[in-house]
Image 1 (cartoon, rainbow, N blue to C red):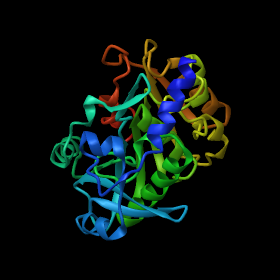
Image 2 (cartoon, rainbow, N blue to C red):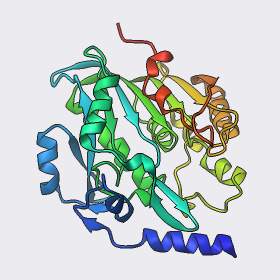
Image 3 (spheres, rainbow, N blue to C red):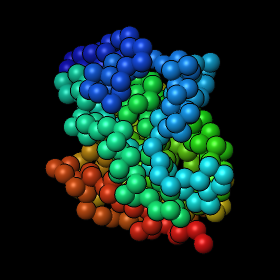
Length: 293
């Protein structure tokens, strides 16, 4: 009964109306979600901090933060995707403490992790850090479609030849979901990644994903669609991770190997009480990936 009530509350909260031009850097904007029209996104596009994408006839403004990008050509660029920014407790969605960031803080972080030869782009997921959309709908097919469209647009905009994809936790889900369609990725680093959603749901004792939805995109089911023979994927996790069980990350690794994708499974110590925090590794992918020469 408790599980049924939890799911009902989650679904009810997810169906609430989003707010037009809500600031998704704030706690209220993160929880409400934001509707944005192209006109409102135009200024961010002009400032080179957003791309406008249309998915299923509905537009979204996807924000990003970069450093040292060349507007004409970029030989190699790191694209980083952050983890989930909403926590669910007793059926109520609340912003996590990691959402307390500003464009300035993210830009400083990106500048710290970039070099003039190998820039980094920090891509905001739908409904988070300036992007329009609803973060309560994460891991569903629409989020995947939005991020695929946005990444392709960023790659084309900056003439990026070689992409390194990195992501932590829910951002790892995004990276794994991009692998079947981003064919110029040479390397991917997925830390504490939600890459086998159904298995995670089962091992956590849930009936559905923590979002309250069961129609999630499950990356492990789409490994066969990866056709990039130049790709190497590093799966990095902690055996004691109680948020995203290591067994699920290992299953994704095994599926990659099964389909002939070069992959390595690496154990590291995750920070925090859940042994889950490995974003510091995701932001430093050259611990594993090769730099373009």
